[in-house]
Image (cartoon, rainbow, N blue to C red; front, side, top):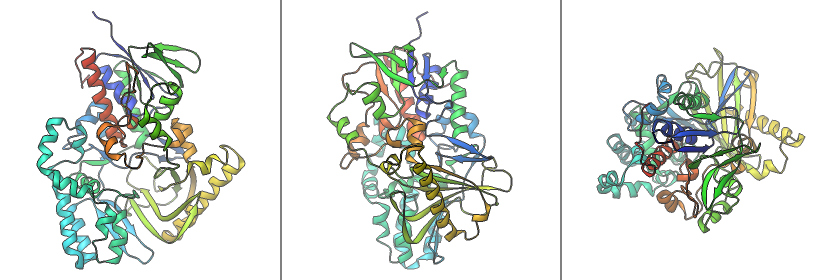
Length: 495
């Protein structure tokens, strides 16, 4: 019997775990090296005095049994699909004057609600919602797994896709006559400036069809489920094992060396870790090109939602929307960023999140890495700033919930430095798109392979340039399928 090819995977985030599961099912001997003591990477949660604060999943694409992506999670973590919560409301946009726009997880109901707010804009509303219904029959998220032949089936729809793909929610909003709708509409898909209308339509349609939802237990439980599947399949998951460098001989990756000096030889090395760390630290910048050097030189100082304030609330908040986007009367500068709106997420639908009769509120914002780095992690100034940020956000929260301060039992602040230390991600960043490079990244990714280096691949967001755990898992699935061809092995999805 031929010897099993050995794969080494750097990082036990969703990308690394997914690659490991498919590799084990397909007959590889697989080792995953993870610096932390738990799996998940960015897909994580943490406990504070009985409250569970979540750092990742908003809505899991493919959760519903009718979704084209459902097979992905059935292959990776079927037990996590046994208890999915489907939301009736995606978010609610509010202002201090009592106006509110409710984004129902039902296109018909959403359309009727919009028309009740602005009957003068009935024509624009009808056009938008009709376009969203297009994705009831043509699944937006299925595009992530599309083959060239699949794309041919989309060819007749290209004019539609280009039309709405080029329009941002801000541009759609400018068509409305109603002043509140003009202000509120760009915020119906979280706080992503420039979000294409096409993305929101696909998201809305998936919610309508109950194909997206919240897996009970949250992000860490989700990652742990995939990790268990990996080890039950015989994979070896090495925690507290930080990789120091990728071993290379004759421009071929042949294993990794850990910080303690131990080495693991391999027939192929996969990095599911941070792109900057992998390319410029583990490989010393020896395998790069003009695009990669430009990409990482253009690293932004901040990403959306890279600052998180989590609150344990001694109050039952059931009956409220799961998310509220509250427009502030006056912008407030917090931690180097101008806050114009308060992004409030209310975890009132999963009993595992908080003790009975209590709730969790998560406040998301943006903050420059440089601002926190200048304070010095662990310094008194850093700790004081975290407290100052918490106090500032709680003061803003009082505008929406005037008497909630007395019910706050736990406060937790996660900064860009927190993300960097926890995930080893460069400046706590996730994938970004330099100006003029979105199309290039969409077609080619960032670095699925590195120039001049053989027997080495990357997976996850630093490979395909796309965020979201579903896209990360798909990238890993496709990678192992391609490696099976190289090693003349059968790609398996059950085991």
